[in-house]
Image (cartoon, rainbow, N blue to C red; front, side, top):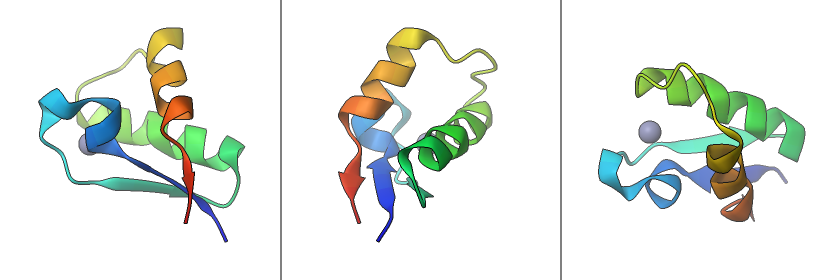
Length: 59
Ligand SMILES: [Zn+2]
């Protein structure tokens, strides 16, 4: 069982339906950072990281 986070929950303004997955929370955070780049977010702020972390759920 892995961890998932809905992009739309982290930032509803994107209107994105992508679900970021990871084997572990660490892997998920890494994948979330990669996905953030697709939204033009080159810099992932601690605030954004917190929002991702707050929305992580078990798959
Ligand atoms: Zn997205």
